[in-house]
Image (cartoon, rainbow, N blue to C red; front, top):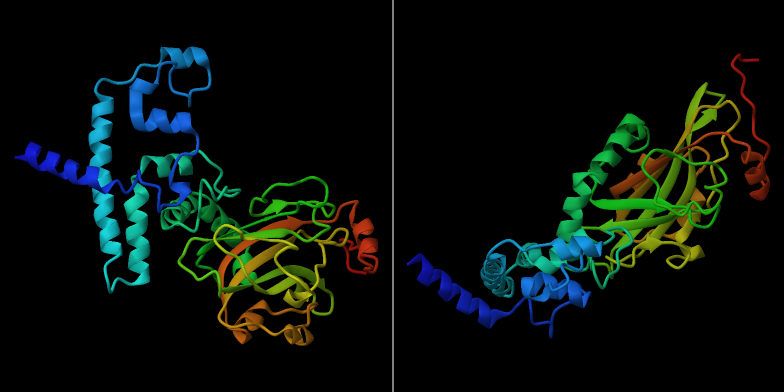
Length: 360
């Protein structure tokens, strides 16, 4: 009975073809390398010179497929494709809410070997939308799981161990992956690891910020605020520290793939505080630069800049007053180096102070 039932489901799957018919499907669901796709989907019959995914030819020639793997793969593929067809039908039914549709569409493609190959063997941050398309629910699901498995935990460990939380915002439930880099300065064109020390020369120009949403949002209407704050500015009057605002952008729009916020993404209307680079004083402690990304519930007027005291900035009050929802963060560290004087001159800043171990 099991054999009869199993083969009847395979016949249904052969009619469905939801994974193999690309007339109405995103091209990102397909492996774009024809030989790799042929090897994976058609099996040993296409492996005359071995799998193309094995680099060395001598190793390819020695490769032998396990017995009956082609038959097992074919039956499994058809069974899973049939299951995916049922999930697609369920997602298209009337009365299904958007969140449930998102879950069903992601589940329908989760076991697709082409989708799994694309995600596992391609860059997830510098994603090519024709391969990893985050506008598709399954890639958002896979991206979120991958982020949560390491990068999110590393971020929270750094934010808490460096006391960015609660020295800036009280806490964070991260819902979007935030990455930064400084591509325009000294060639250090890489995504910054949370808490990394960067020289003042590297940070002399504004960073680009990548906001990767994994949740279901409407990119056509959703607006974002980006704030960079330094909670370690020495305040001699109070014998303590104060928070300064290094950079502020509001009313930023991104989508799931075009989400790197640089000069292409904003104009003067979006800038409420121009970038001031790290210029730590000599013998002062290490300074933390926290990047906070918020979802806006409403547009923010450019005139809000008139009410900001950037040299004594309260990020919590600003967030409450403008109804902001913190969704992601990043942090880097800076300390005095030989480039600081040059950066101060470049931005027309006064000469830095030199602190001594003994108060004079």
